[in-house]
Image 1 (tube, helix red, strand yellow):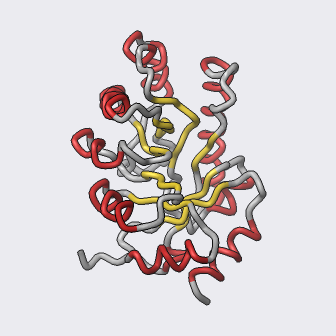
Image 2 (image 1 turned 30 degrees about the horizontal axis):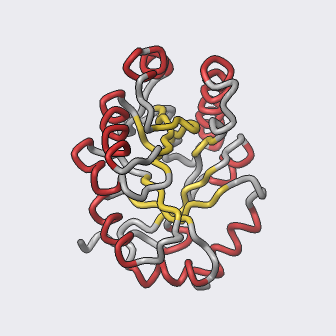
Length: 224
């Protein structure tokens, strides 16, 4: 089954209100074009310079999502064009994104990343840290970023109950923040959770964005 067929199969399983981000990190431009020519236009990358290079050579109506851990010194590479930054886990990073967005006269959409997994390897905020950011004067002065939701990664495990528990935790965080900080903001609506191995569970638990790579493009290429 080719890339286009795999995307079509996955889209059949998703609700209309769930956005599919085809995770194209480490994949060649040819693979992305195969998906694009089949009508898919939302792609995710996790290396800023690699993403910038792909942006330069690929069609300009692609919606690019940055899905990895973003270092502050790399924001400048993607600020001119990125549609959504999934993994924001500090006020320092938000301030840098705001600064680079201002230079380009843009408002960049961001998701707050939460640590929901029982593993220690994942990045992310806890609820207290997130509220400290949202309550801060510094955050309220940021005019070139917009928080549109939350993101999190479940533990890599075959324990379905644990995955469900972690995704529900993220949904509860989203609901709390929506009520407390974003009740009047229609843009705060995204819950980015679910990858190739657990996206079906994520959708059942309220995900609005799934990030799928290997189920579309095959195993990652680590030759670089």
